[in-house]
Image (cartoon, rainbow, N blue to C red; front, side, top):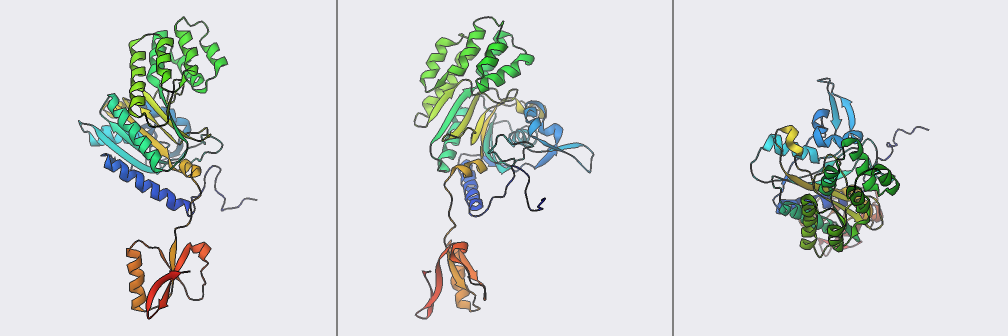
Length: 383
Protein backbone atom coordinates (compact mmCIF):
# COMPACT_ATOMS: atom_id res chain seq x y z
CA UNK A 1 0.00 0.00 0.00
CA UNK A 2 1.26 3.46 -0.91
CA UNK A 3 1.08 5.54 2.27
CA UNK A 4 1.37 9.29 1.53
CA UNK A 5 3.18 9.93 4.82
CA UNK A 6 6.08 7.59 4.01
CA UNK A 7 9.36 9.28 3.17
CA UNK A 8 11.72 8.22 0.36
CA UNK A 9 14.35 5.61 1.14
CA UNK A 10 17.35 6.89 3.14
CA UNK A 11 15.47 10.10 4.03
CA UNK A 12 14.12 10.62 7.54
CA UNK A 13 12.85 13.19 10.00
CA UNK A 14 14.88 14.24 13.03
CA UNK A 15 12.47 14.01 15.96
CA UNK A 16 12.53 15.28 19.55
CA UNK A 17 14.79 15.19 21.46
CA UNK A 18 17.36 14.48 18.69
CA UNK A 19 16.51 17.67 16.80
CA UNK A 20 17.29 19.79 19.87
CA UNK A 21 20.53 17.86 20.39
CA UNK A 22 21.49 18.51 16.75
CA UNK A 23 20.71 22.22 17.01
CA UNK A 24 22.66 22.53 20.25
CA UNK A 25 25.70 20.89 18.64
CA UNK A 26 25.38 23.09 15.56
CA UNK A 27 25.41 26.26 17.67
CA UNK A 28 28.29 25.03 19.80
CA UNK A 29 30.42 24.18 16.76
CA UNK A 30 29.72 27.45 14.94
CA UNK A 31 30.55 29.42 18.08
CA UNK A 32 33.82 27.50 18.32
CA UNK A 33 34.68 28.25 14.69
CA UNK A 34 33.91 31.92 15.30
CA UNK A 35 36.41 31.90 18.17
CA UNK A 36 39.08 30.80 15.68
CA UNK A 37 38.15 33.61 13.28
CA UNK A 38 35.98 31.64 10.84
CA UNK A 39 33.14 33.68 9.32
CA UNK A 40 29.74 32.09 8.72
CA UNK A 41 28.42 31.84 5.15
CA UNK A 42 25.06 30.46 3.99
CA UNK A 43 25.31 29.26 0.37
CA UNK A 44 22.11 28.52 -1.58
CA UNK A 45 20.64 25.04 -1.60
CA UNK A 46 20.48 25.04 -5.41
CA UNK A 47 22.78 26.44 -8.11
CA UNK A 48 23.37 26.11 -11.83
CA UNK A 49 24.91 22.72 -12.45
CA UNK A 50 28.02 24.03 -14.20
CA UNK A 51 28.84 26.02 -11.05
CA UNK A 52 28.38 23.11 -8.65
CA UNK A 53 30.27 20.58 -10.77
CA UNK A 54 32.93 22.73 -12.40
CA UNK A 55 36.52 21.53 -12.28
CA UNK A 56 37.54 19.37 -9.33
CA UNK A 57 34.01 19.32 -7.90
CA UNK A 58 32.97 17.18 -10.89
CA UNK A 59 33.62 14.18 -8.64
CA UNK A 60 30.24 15.02 -7.07
CA UNK A 61 28.37 14.47 -10.32
CA UNK A 62 26.87 11.08 -9.40
CA UNK A 63 25.76 12.39 -6.00
CA UNK A 64 23.99 15.48 -7.32
CA UNK A 65 20.25 15.75 -7.97
CA UNK A 66 19.62 17.57 -11.27
CA UNK A 67 16.55 19.65 -12.11
CA UNK A 68 15.59 22.06 -14.88
CA UNK A 69 15.20 25.70 -13.89
CA UNK A 70 11.68 26.79 -14.83
CA UNK A 71 12.85 30.40 -15.32
CA UNK A 72 15.98 30.01 -17.44
CA UNK A 73 15.64 26.47 -18.81
CA UNK A 74 19.19 25.72 -17.59
CA UNK A 75 20.16 22.64 -15.61
CA UNK A 76 20.43 23.18 -11.88
CA UNK A 77 21.80 20.99 -9.11
CA UNK A 78 20.90 20.59 -5.45
CA UNK A 79 24.16 20.84 -3.52
CA UNK A 80 25.75 17.55 -2.50
CA UNK A 81 28.65 19.26 -0.70
CA UNK A 82 29.11 22.83 0.56
CA UNK A 83 32.90 22.93 0.11
CA UNK A 84 32.80 23.91 -3.61
CA UNK A 85 30.31 26.65 -2.72
CA UNK A 86 32.69 28.03 -0.09
CA UNK A 87 35.49 28.00 -2.71
CA UNK A 88 33.24 29.95 -5.09
CA UNK A 89 32.44 32.53 -2.40
CA UNK A 90 36.12 32.99 -1.56
CA UNK A 91 37.27 33.25 -5.17
CA UNK A 92 34.45 35.16 -6.83
CA UNK A 93 32.56 37.15 -4.17
CA UNK A 94 34.95 38.03 -1.34
CA UNK A 95 38.08 38.37 -3.49
CA UNK A 96 40.34 38.95 -0.49
CA UNK A 97 44.11 39.02 -0.81
CA UNK A 98 44.92 37.57 2.62
CA UNK A 99 43.86 34.34 4.34
CA UNK A 100 40.10 33.81 4.42
CA UNK A 101 38.42 31.55 6.98
CA UNK A 102 34.82 30.48 6.32
CA UNK A 103 32.42 28.12 8.07
CA UNK A 104 28.93 26.84 7.26
CA UNK A 105 26.15 24.56 8.46
CA UNK A 106 23.22 23.13 6.54
CA UNK A 107 21.71 20.10 4.79
CA UNK A 108 23.04 18.67 1.55
CA UNK A 109 21.32 16.12 -0.67
CA UNK A 110 22.73 12.97 -2.26
CA UNK A 111 21.12 11.18 -5.18
CA UNK A 112 22.38 7.90 -3.72
CA UNK A 113 23.42 7.02 -0.14
CA UNK A 114 27.09 6.46 0.62
CA UNK A 115 26.24 3.19 2.39
CA UNK A 116 23.44 1.03 3.77
CA UNK A 117 23.24 3.04 7.01
CA UNK A 118 23.76 6.46 5.42
CA UNK A 119 21.22 9.22 4.94
CA UNK A 120 20.69 10.86 1.56
CA UNK A 121 20.32 14.16 3.43
CA UNK A 122 23.46 14.63 5.53
CA UNK A 123 23.64 17.74 7.70
CA UNK A 124 27.03 19.25 6.98
CA UNK A 125 28.95 21.47 9.41
CA UNK A 126 32.41 22.54 8.31
CA UNK A 127 35.25 25.02 8.09
CA UNK A 128 37.45 26.02 5.15
CA UNK A 129 40.69 28.02 5.07
CA UNK A 130 41.78 29.74 1.84
CA UNK A 131 44.98 31.54 0.88
CA UNK A 132 47.80 29.70 2.68
CA UNK A 133 49.72 26.75 1.21
CA UNK A 134 51.87 26.00 4.26
CA UNK A 135 51.44 23.09 6.65
CA UNK A 136 50.39 25.64 9.32
CA UNK A 137 46.97 25.86 7.65
CA UNK A 138 46.53 22.08 7.63
CA UNK A 139 47.60 22.02 11.27
CA UNK A 140 44.97 24.60 12.22
CA UNK A 141 42.26 22.71 10.33
CA UNK A 142 43.25 19.43 12.01
CA UNK A 143 43.24 21.16 15.41
CA UNK A 144 39.76 22.51 14.72
CA UNK A 145 38.54 19.10 13.57
CA UNK A 146 39.84 17.46 16.75
CA UNK A 147 38.23 20.19 18.88
CA UNK A 148 34.95 19.65 17.04
CA UNK A 149 35.02 15.92 17.69
CA UNK A 150 35.79 16.55 21.37
CA UNK A 151 32.82 18.94 21.58
CA UNK A 152 30.43 16.25 20.33
CA UNK A 153 31.40 13.99 23.27
CA UNK A 154 31.88 11.05 20.90
CA UNK A 155 33.78 8.13 22.41
CA UNK A 156 36.39 5.93 20.75
CA UNK A 157 37.20 8.44 18.00
CA UNK A 158 40.09 7.78 15.63
CA UNK A 159 41.38 10.16 12.96
CA UNK A 160 43.20 8.70 9.98
CA UNK A 161 45.68 10.83 8.00
CA UNK A 162 46.67 10.26 4.40
CA UNK A 163 48.29 12.28 1.63
CA UNK A 164 46.93 12.41 -1.92
CA UNK A 165 50.08 14.30 -2.98
CA UNK A 166 52.05 11.10 -2.37
CA UNK A 167 49.94 9.25 -4.93
CA UNK A 168 50.21 12.13 -7.40
CA UNK A 169 54.02 12.21 -7.18
CA UNK A 170 54.35 8.45 -7.67
CA UNK A 171 51.83 8.44 -10.53
CA UNK A 172 53.67 11.24 -12.34
CA UNK A 173 57.04 9.51 -11.89
CA UNK A 174 55.62 6.22 -13.17
CA UNK A 175 54.01 7.91 -16.17
CA UNK A 176 50.50 6.85 -15.12
CA UNK A 177 47.85 8.49 -17.29
CA UNK A 178 44.20 9.24 -16.49
CA UNK A 179 42.99 5.95 -17.96
CA UNK A 180 44.94 3.97 -15.37
CA UNK A 181 45.19 6.66 -12.68
CA UNK A 182 41.54 6.68 -11.63
CA UNK A 183 41.11 2.89 -11.26
CA UNK A 184 44.52 2.69 -9.58
CA UNK A 185 43.42 5.36 -7.10
CA UNK A 186 40.19 3.43 -6.36
CA UNK A 187 42.05 0.13 -5.97
CA UNK A 188 44.47 1.69 -3.49
CA UNK A 189 41.64 3.22 -1.49
CA UNK A 190 39.87 -0.16 -1.33
CA UNK A 191 43.17 -1.97 -0.69
CA UNK A 192 42.17 -4.32 -3.50
CA UNK A 193 45.41 -6.24 -4.02
CA UNK A 194 44.25 -8.36 -6.99
CA UNK A 195 43.21 -5.18 -8.82
CA UNK A 196 46.49 -3.47 -7.89
CA UNK A 197 48.52 -6.41 -9.19
CA UNK A 198 46.58 -6.29 -12.44
CA UNK A 199 46.76 -2.50 -12.89
CA UNK A 200 50.49 -2.31 -12.17
CA UNK A 201 51.43 -5.30 -14.32
CA UNK A 202 54.16 -4.22 -16.70
CA UNK A 203 54.93 -1.09 -14.67
CA UNK A 204 58.64 -0.55 -14.13
CA UNK A 205 60.30 -0.70 -10.74
CA UNK A 206 60.52 0.94 -8.27
CA UNK A 207 57.10 2.36 -9.12
CA UNK A 208 55.20 -0.93 -9.16
CA UNK A 209 56.68 -1.93 -5.82
CA UNK A 210 55.79 1.46 -4.33
CA UNK A 211 52.13 1.21 -5.33
CA UNK A 212 51.91 -2.37 -4.03
CA UNK A 213 53.49 -1.33 -0.74
CA UNK A 214 51.16 1.63 -0.02
CA UNK A 215 48.24 -0.49 1.34
CA UNK A 216 50.61 -2.00 3.92
CA UNK A 217 51.77 1.38 5.21
CA UNK A 218 49.31 2.12 7.99
CA UNK A 219 49.52 2.47 11.76
CA UNK A 220 51.16 4.93 14.15
CA UNK A 221 53.96 7.45 13.74
CA UNK A 222 56.42 4.64 13.00
CA UNK A 223 54.80 4.25 9.58
CA UNK A 224 56.41 7.49 8.45
CA UNK A 225 59.95 6.15 8.92
CA UNK A 226 59.01 2.82 7.36
CA UNK A 227 57.64 4.67 4.35
CA UNK A 228 60.86 6.70 3.98
CA UNK A 229 62.76 3.45 3.52
CA UNK A 230 60.13 1.64 1.44
CA UNK A 231 59.21 4.36 -1.09
CA UNK A 232 61.36 6.01 -3.79
CA UNK A 233 63.40 8.95 -2.49
CA UNK A 234 61.68 11.73 -4.45
CA UNK A 235 61.34 15.36 -3.26
CA UNK A 236 57.53 15.13 -3.40
CA UNK A 237 57.54 11.90 -1.41
CA UNK A 238 59.82 13.41 1.24
CA UNK A 239 57.62 16.51 1.47
CA UNK A 240 54.41 14.49 1.88
CA UNK A 241 55.93 12.36 4.63
CA UNK A 242 57.33 15.46 6.34
CA UNK A 243 53.85 17.03 6.28
CA UNK A 244 52.31 13.96 7.90
CA UNK A 245 55.08 13.76 10.51
CA UNK A 246 54.53 17.43 11.38
CA UNK A 247 50.80 16.92 11.87
CA UNK A 248 51.34 13.87 14.05
CA UNK A 249 53.85 15.64 16.28
CA UNK A 250 51.62 18.70 16.65
CA UNK A 251 48.67 16.55 17.79
CA UNK A 252 50.52 13.94 19.80
CA UNK A 253 47.76 13.62 22.42
CA UNK A 254 45.04 12.81 19.88
CA UNK A 255 44.18 9.34 18.63
CA UNK A 256 45.77 9.77 15.20
CA UNK A 257 46.92 7.12 12.76
CA UNK A 258 48.46 7.13 9.30
CA UNK A 259 47.13 5.21 6.31
CA UNK A 260 48.95 5.97 3.07
CA UNK A 261 46.26 4.19 1.04
CA UNK A 262 43.37 6.08 2.69
CA UNK A 263 42.72 8.25 -0.36
CA UNK A 264 39.71 10.20 -1.57
CA UNK A 265 38.76 12.92 -4.00
CA UNK A 266 40.62 11.89 -7.16
CA UNK A 267 40.97 15.08 -9.18
CA UNK A 268 39.90 17.12 -6.13
CA UNK A 269 42.20 16.70 -3.13
CA UNK A 270 45.85 17.64 -3.59
CA UNK A 271 47.59 17.05 -0.26
CA UNK A 272 46.89 15.91 3.29
CA UNK A 273 43.49 14.25 3.83
CA UNK A 274 41.66 13.49 7.09
CA UNK A 275 38.96 10.98 8.02
CA UNK A 276 37.40 10.60 11.48
CA UNK A 277 35.85 7.28 12.53
CA UNK A 278 33.87 6.24 15.60
CA UNK A 279 34.16 2.80 17.16
CA UNK A 280 33.84 -0.02 14.68
CA UNK A 281 31.85 1.95 12.12
CA UNK A 282 33.12 1.74 8.55
CA UNK A 283 31.80 5.14 7.46
CA UNK A 284 33.55 8.33 8.54
CA UNK A 285 31.74 10.98 10.61
CA UNK A 286 34.05 13.70 9.28
CA UNK A 287 36.18 14.16 6.16
CA UNK A 288 38.59 16.82 5.01
CA UNK A 289 41.92 17.76 3.55
CA UNK A 290 43.77 20.04 1.15
CA UNK A 291 42.27 20.92 -2.22
CA UNK A 292 44.44 23.67 -3.71
CA UNK A 293 43.20 25.41 -6.84
CA UNK A 294 39.50 24.60 -6.49
CA UNK A 295 38.65 28.27 -7.03
CA UNK A 296 40.52 28.50 -10.34
CA UNK A 297 37.35 27.94 -12.36
CA UNK A 298 35.83 30.96 -10.60
CA UNK A 299 38.74 33.20 -11.52
CA UNK A 300 41.20 32.72 -8.64
CA UNK A 301 43.39 29.72 -7.91
CA UNK A 302 43.97 29.76 -4.15
CA UNK A 303 45.44 27.23 -1.71
CA UNK A 304 42.65 25.67 0.32
CA UNK A 305 42.15 23.19 3.13
CA UNK A 306 39.16 22.29 5.31
CA UNK A 307 36.85 19.65 6.72
CA UNK A 308 33.17 18.91 7.27
CA UNK A 309 31.24 16.83 9.80
CA UNK A 310 28.03 14.92 9.15
CA UNK A 311 25.84 15.94 12.09
CA UNK A 312 23.26 13.23 11.35
CA UNK A 313 25.88 10.50 11.48
CA UNK A 314 27.28 11.93 14.70
CA UNK A 315 23.82 11.86 16.30
CA UNK A 316 23.57 8.18 15.42
CA UNK A 317 26.79 7.51 17.33
CA UNK A 318 25.78 9.34 20.52
CA UNK A 319 23.75 7.97 23.45
CA UNK A 320 20.01 8.54 23.17
CA UNK A 321 19.23 12.06 24.43
CA UNK A 322 16.52 12.75 26.99
CA UNK A 323 13.82 15.39 26.88
CA UNK A 324 14.86 18.64 28.47
CA UNK A 325 13.36 18.91 31.96
CA UNK A 326 10.62 21.46 32.34
CA UNK A 327 8.09 23.04 34.65
CA UNK A 328 4.34 22.48 34.24
CA UNK A 329 2.06 25.47 34.81
CA UNK A 330 -1.72 25.52 34.98
CA UNK A 331 -3.61 27.91 32.73
CA UNK A 332 -4.44 30.96 34.80
CA UNK A 333 -5.23 34.52 33.82
CA UNK A 334 -3.64 36.08 36.89
CA UNK A 335 -0.86 38.57 36.25
CA UNK A 336 1.07 37.11 39.17
CA UNK A 337 1.36 33.70 37.46
CA UNK A 338 2.18 35.30 34.11
CA UNK A 339 4.99 37.27 35.76
CA UNK A 340 6.37 34.14 37.43
CA UNK A 341 6.31 32.20 34.14
CA UNK A 342 8.09 35.06 32.34
CA UNK A 343 10.77 35.19 35.06
CA UNK A 344 11.41 31.46 34.80
CA UNK A 345 11.66 31.54 31.01
CA UNK A 346 14.02 34.52 31.17
CA UNK A 347 16.21 32.50 33.53
CA UNK A 348 16.46 29.72 30.92
CA UNK A 349 13.79 27.41 32.29
CA UNK A 350 11.36 25.54 30.06
CA UNK A 351 7.77 26.23 31.18
CA UNK A 352 4.87 24.31 29.61
CA UNK A 353 1.34 25.65 30.13
CA UNK A 354 -1.31 22.98 30.67
CA UNK A 355 -4.52 23.89 28.85
CA UNK A 356 -7.81 23.53 30.72
CA UNK A 357 -9.44 20.16 30.14
CA UNK A 358 -6.18 18.71 28.75
CA UNK A 359 -4.21 16.84 31.40
CA UNK A 360 -0.53 16.80 30.41
CA UNK A 361 1.48 13.60 30.76
CA UNK A 362 4.86 14.28 32.39
CA UNK A 363 6.59 11.64 30.24
CA UNK A 364 5.42 13.38 27.06
CA UNK A 365 6.16 16.95 28.13
CA UNK A 366 9.43 16.17 29.89
CA UNK A 367 8.31 18.12 32.96
CA UNK A 368 9.65 17.06 36.34
CA UNK A 369 8.36 20.08 38.33
CA UNK A 370 5.27 22.23 38.48
CA UNK A 371 4.19 25.67 39.55
CA UNK A 372 1.97 25.45 42.61
CA UNK A 373 0.38 27.97 44.95
CA UNK A 374 2.32 27.71 48.23
CA UNK A 375 1.81 30.08 51.17
CA UNK A 376 0.13 32.63 48.97
CA UNK A 377 2.66 32.72 46.12
CA UNK A 378 3.55 30.69 43.01
CA UNK A 379 6.49 28.39 43.67
CA UNK A 380 8.27 25.58 41.77
CA UNK A 381 7.77 22.20 43.46
CA UNK A 382 8.52 18.60 42.41
CA UNK A 383 5.88 17.07 40.18
